[in-house]
Length: 445
Ligand SMILES: Cc1ncc(COP(=O)(O)O)c(C=O)c1O
Image 1 (cartoon, rainbow, N blue to C red):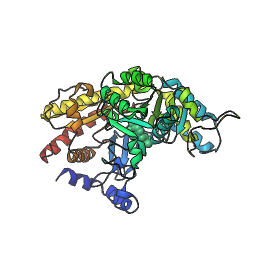
Image 2 (cartoon, rainbow, N blue to C red):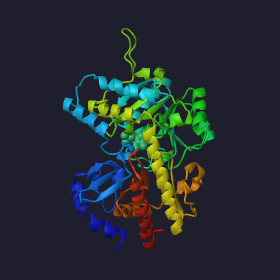
Image 3 (cartoon, rainbow, N blue to C red):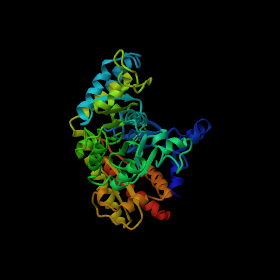
Image 4 (tube, rainbow, N blue to C red):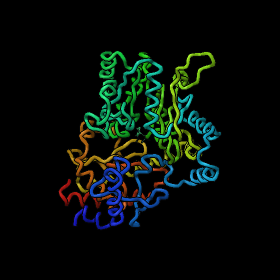
């Protein structure tokens, strides 16, 4: 018996589907993060904090729609709004009131948002933000931070976990327009001086891989001051953190005001959708000129921009999460989870730590860190230790072992929703203890 043997034995339906998928889908998957050896689980349905696979097995879900589901699966007011919209049509090819309401909610919640443009994904949002910045400043250079992820388009492919050292298929000229620097103001200043063409700086607001490697305290504030002095467009990517850290995202918590903010995930209540929101002066680059004026606007079509279904779900979701109560519930669930998982590490004498910000948790196993049975904020942990990360095989076996225990992780960690309850946390901590023992008996720890 082994972790993998148990996993394979329990999931004949998923294995069958994975073999079929391999005939028509590269590596059998549709998102790189879902690739899993020997095969991923195939979901059948979901509700609240849980999902069920095609073999009838139930999981506490910590993928939560890749972070889109702050309210859990099928939250009633969101589902009802989407169902009502479905009955009225899914695409009018015309303007509609819901898109105005949606933008009004974004402006109400996100402190720096004056004007909003909707896209169909977070990737499209960062692409649009960078184009707006170039149009506004006339400077093509971009600074992004080491390992920060902003989607899969060409300008942000460098130093991303989903691309190699030299991202395949990305033109050299595009890569040359991007400087990748560490989270250090001296490095930022140096890159700006040396290049002389930097028009935008983009940052993953809570740090690389949604806070796995945190942004040092005070750094965002320094970045805000610096970019304002140099007239560089400061873009905070809040695709994950927006509406999750607080109704107004990291910028609300940190009191920072970027020029542009990119949003997606929770924005659309579990449906596809993204947005760029920001200062009117920059967003105006999207506006049509007055008759007689020269036309040099940033073009932006997009068949599914602010489509009625996403807009209806998005409005319902944003209204529901506006008070901050749901964020606090999810944050409390994650806090209890992190502390409970660290208590298990402690009890079993296994080195590692479970840490996180807001409603996320990240698992670092091995090395020389011995945790207390407590919650940990990554700002208080050794950077090099977190940056080293887990051995890929440890992550793989952990994922399989947790699935064997009825828990679906998102990479080496996950996100809670406001409907994760005490029984979810207890089941997860129990599964975690069993998974750790299984990993240890296989020599993976
Ligand atoms: C910080 C960040 N930016 C951008 C994106 C891209 O968003 P999407 O997957 O909707 O294209 C993601 C996706 O996970 C993200 O985490």
